[in-house]
Length: 215
Length: 222
Image 1 (cartoon, rainbow over the protein chains, first blue to last red):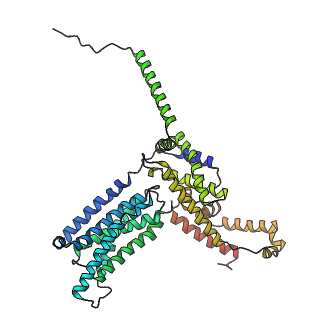
Image 2 (image 1 turned 30 degrees about the vertical axis):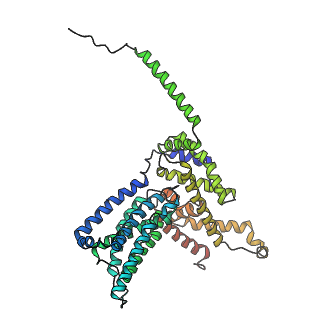
Image 3 (image 1 turned 90 degrees about the vertical axis):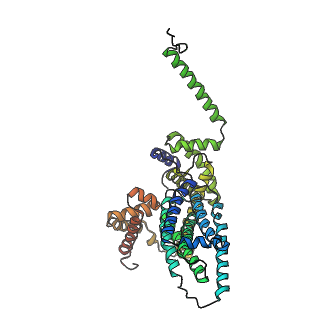
């Protein structure tokens, strides 16, 4: 630094122009979530198999897995927007933890049921490659839109914000997958879903972090 | 039968103006009392909202008062006075850049504290990076350096060759070296000053460093 703090204050003051405060993180999260959820529902109803989903809603494990995935996405969205504002408590980062545990537990129970019913057979590790591609293809536009909205805020916790944004995008995509996927999850399916979600989280944490900068 | 319309006692314009003036005085006095009674937190909130509206006096007051607050936070992470002042200045610059993220009605202190903490940690990371790149030199090694190598003539010659190598660089690369390596601006600041994008600056700096290394070492170290 070559100028004194007083000189810097004078310079910053002289450069100030009126600015409009950002909307609250709740409103900004809602502004993105409402159209994203609307679009996801429209695609799921138009191209997916909603009847199969409604038929299985009577199965509590299936419903818990679907609701857990959807709520993880929604809560991760809200948490990312909360953490993108300086001064908000970092506890917001734990918001999606409970639904994520529900999603993972219910999916594990589905796997257990599958193994119990069909036994352990030769699973091909690439049997669920379509699921992997679907989660990445559906999750990437959501991640990009989230990233675009988060750019306007300053993050003092870039890793937290970008990983939550990736988690939100990936788990919403995983929830939408239920409409294009046979009900019930086998172990390979489940592992593939978890790997796809982790890949999107990792991608956002690595590249989203660089793009958002360390300001 | 006609009824005369009556709108109350007539007030002439000068009397009306006197009433308005008195009302304003009463209101101003009320605001002054309110300002005296407000806590520091409320005062900063008021100043921050005024700063968002680009009210220069309020903005300068807020930055000046928050500097001491930031200095306290910086001292928790650093002991060197120069580094502490760097953290204060970086924080003030960040506050200026992202003052739209302050949500009116919320306390200003946690908002500033979070930015100051992030800048203090950035400075710690930068220090660690520098320490990793530096190699400690033993005193006996320094003592064995011939005097000729330390002479001002050699320093002058080295400076001249660096200046010549710099002058030979294309303008964009020269600007990147000057802003990022000599003036030690951050990528964002250098980008704002030069008008080049951050990726263009990174690329120009990389090419410039390769060229300088080639010229200054005669290709031995390239």
